[in-house]
Image 1 (cartoon, one colour):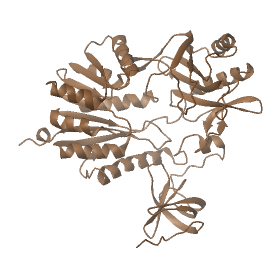
Image 2 (cartoon, one colour; image 1 turned 60 degrees about the vertical axis):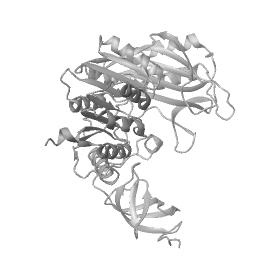
Image 3 (tube, one colour; image 1 turned 90 degrees about the vertical axis):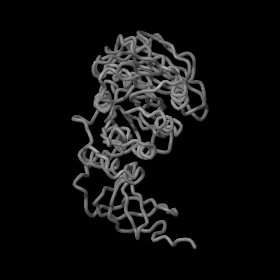
Image 4 (tube, helix red, strand yellow; image 1 turned 120 degrees about the vertical axis):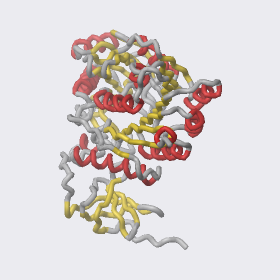
Length: 462
């Protein structure tokens, strides 16, 4: 017998918001039936219109607020604030931190059934605006001029903007300068529908500690009209620029970067530091976009690893070696694994750049390579994982359980998959001692965590 829903589409109802979803929408319940409403905050009373109903939940639109949350922040009614990617901008920073910390606690309990794990207060930023060191901005045309900004949700309509609240000022400045120069030179934008035109995206990367700027011009075509003049103007207008790169993406795809990259001017890389560790960053390198909070995150990972200089450490999902290099400062030997060959090339280059010789890097899937090492008799005292949002592969978790490293440090960008994987490790003989949330992306719904995990026999000595 099908359940009769307590609301129907186009109903107007009064609600009280109880919680937030993982993407920042308010949650109200009507006779136990969840209604998700964008822009609603816990504790607020409101009138909403039901715009969609499903078996397990409905979606509403906020019509009127009767009582506002003390954490609500009024934001300007313009497209930058409406579509600029800051889903939590209408919440005070104190409220954002509370929401993210609560989210971590809830999923650990609900998904991981981890009732007794210590969850520390989230580590936020002193200055939570203008923190991103990288932008990749789509380009279009309007009234004969180039526009560049961001897409409206669920569309490819570009909102033209000369700023972003979360990009570093140097990044905003670089994107706008390149847009203006390309517009003045008459370089046409790429058109998705016809697959014609030239300029697809403008990318800027900035080394916050070094002050070095990279500009990447992404085009459909192998040639850029007025290429020499373009380079000359960029160098004149942006004195911090150290590298101008051309990337060609000739495919009909939503993927931003193509396979062919050439250096138009300057260096192939720019440099930046996280703590005392130096990194070379190319156009294609993965590098954390918030270096200030990355150091906070990695310092905590290093603290949880608690190295004394005698340990063998495996860093799964090592990327360009950011965590590996941090660990190598204190470990006897670090082995990094990453599936992307170019990232491993970057990792080796970064180890050499820092004069570190106690690292080895291997290309391959973490679950395959580490399982192979274990079967060959190679183990580790400490194992660090920093997987993508989908979490660790189950085969890797089973290898960890069999290998029995004394300590596991889990760096996560998704609390839900973290909770799932911690449950598997707990059932396999490990104990989660503590979890430290870190706010890497203020004004968005994302939250990172570092977890300290040890063998139960070590945690509970007889």
